[in-house]
Image 1 (cartoon, helix red, strand yellow):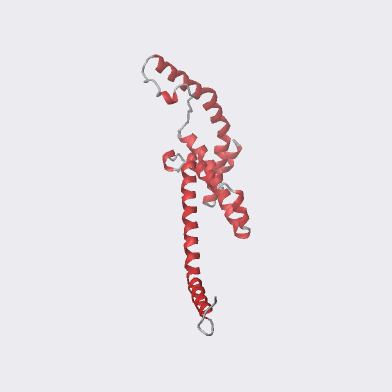
Image 2: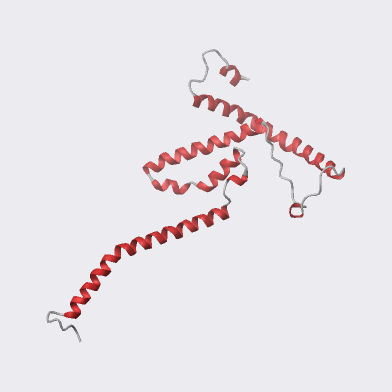
Length: 186
């Protein structure tokens, strides 16, 4: 095709890493629809059929009760499928860099990016085992505990700041009670 003919011409080699990544990304984007169609229309159905035949032949043990009756989620981990996911990773990295640059001029830009979701999507795209990323429920507990600890630290700091004032107030009360003649107030 024309793209490959131009890319492979002598003297038309990538000038830097960014250009090389961009060319690879363009090639993967061209392959994307073809791979999706092969996965969706052919491979997924083939895998379902083979798996069902294995169940009928008692090759596969019965599913645990907690997942019986649930639909299988087939994920392709071929090098091409992983390369397609890498395109998504590059998008996340570029967005994070862009938002970081904007945040230097306007910190409110950080409010627009869902950092937790970005981490989840990134981890999924690069094939990180799910157990490595903290689940949202546990993350909420961790954040609540940190907030409690910060609140406690602020209260302790406030108490330390107030302690000298408390001592001065007690001394002032003593002086007031004793009065100028030492008799105090009745």
